[in-house]
Length: 621
Image (cartoon, rainbow, N blue to C red):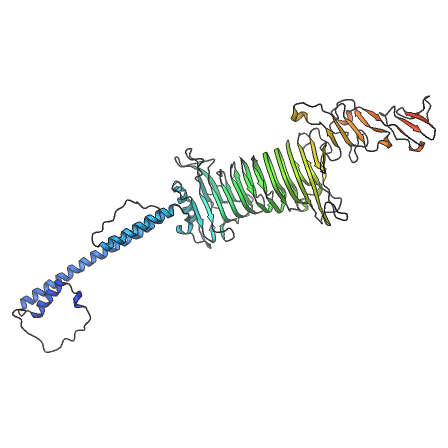
């Protein structure tokens, strides 16, 4: 350097070698060299002054860069949050002014964010993203509601499903599931879907009741018109799967699931524990698959609607586990365990079919109950009921089928299981009619009994034979037994089977004359086990065949008029030519006049005149 002056203090500085000279800013380095070599103080001071200013400027530049970096980081964090929440504007642009590498980095992040956009749009929302803990202690109500509401708000974009990882989720008010009721997409099925990881390990547990709940339920279902924000009667597409739903309330009006918007819905793989299980108003085209019910009162109550399908649903406990008041619906492989009341109750059964159902409920009162409609049962296996003595239901008040109104039941394939606790000869009814004034009927085929020694009434077994019906008197209606190649009708009670056209006037528009042959008669007013004198009368031309024609001296009797009751009918005897010793004369009654008997002891024929026997000359014999 020109005019360099080597001016040094002989005392060493002992400065540490603690920085890299190559990394010193060139502006600072130029001025530091001036300080080192300049002789004049003014030059040195000028160099030091400028060095301080450059240091300050450099510090400010560093601060700006730091703030920009922090802002970019905040933007990135918000961007990721937006990706998760599906709020990203895909056409946004980022101003990259400083570093080409930084620009490339953010472009990569954007591409990944766009990928997340697409991925989350087709996947389920996790309740834990919204703050749910699932630890069995934290109140997760607000988090779950936030997830459900968000899912519904994004429904048309595909994010309708809310996922529950394994855990125990505590709620303190009902979780409201919405289904779109707009006319333009009513049938598309825009309803919120709850999906658990597994029903054995994923529980939603309700404790207490919020003042805002219109019903004490874990989950409620409503329809919703998005244009107006109003609730609606119906809504399609709600689904609940792979969950245990528990309501800890002991209130008799508490439920697991309650609602009115379950059209085209699905409940699958659910464990339900509550006082009442599921109540649904007017569902249609909905499915209920593998729903297990642990209840105190009702299990599944479908109140109205059509085209519902239940498969492999199990009422483990409770009273009246299945109550289905729905049209053209099907129950397949549904069954009950330790339940009371009516196992399968159909208040209105418009063409309902049961296939392969049954029960193991020995304390049930009725296996099947029906009020109106037509019910077809294809295969039913049952444990013989022992009555529900704890609730005052004795065996004589129990039946397989309880018909309350004008209903028709067609059952084929009834298997009756052995129950050792029921005393022999204390039997219940196959059919119980609550009213004698209706035109109900039942067609029963192929009954098979199980005994302690095997199938079909093996000798030595405790066999319980179902009494056909409780109704010994009935103005209208008929029963029907088809078994072992025999097809027999009954007059509403088991005591009097018949063959013929009785009752067809109600269904065949009087196409057939009302005439029949009755098979079980001791006399014109008595069957083998019942007095039928007050039962609906016979039609003119009806034939009654006696059980002991030889003892009665007649094959039977024929009704000579049509009457309201049997006691008002008149009859003519159908004589039977007979012979034997005097002490074996048939015991005849009034109405059998003209019956002949050849008395081998007298060696002559005699005739019954209503009060005594006489010979051909009119002499008492």
